[in-house]
Image (cartoon, rainbow, N blue to C red):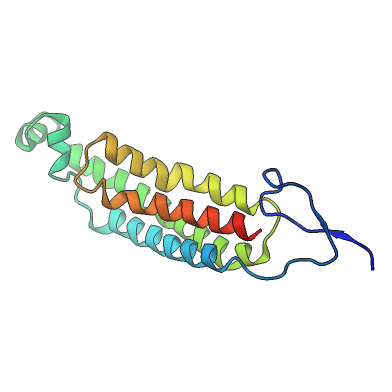
Length: 162
């Protein structure tokens, strides 16, 4: 029997190992964590696009200006923010769809580079959002710490399984 190299999810981080068989089991925990996070991103995108008000109570507090003064100084601000949040929500939902696809189709296939894709996709999405909510002292900052922690857990679960 000819020896084959086992494909690694994050080959750059793992030593090369030659084995007689290919590992065929699925990184189940990573798959389910990323499935949940994909659904969460889609729901969050829908919230931003269709439900979220242009200004939350924490926004004028961070800016340091009462809401009435903001409305007087920039009467078009809330209409403009409504458009911005609709676009942002669409991007969140799109990232969620891609995360869901990654979780359900790519993670089980364990394609080369998948671990890096998972890790790098989490940085500009859930990690950056959580970090900015801490910078803004958002009322939701502690709740929004959970998605990056779950994303990190998914990356770790994927890498450990590879």
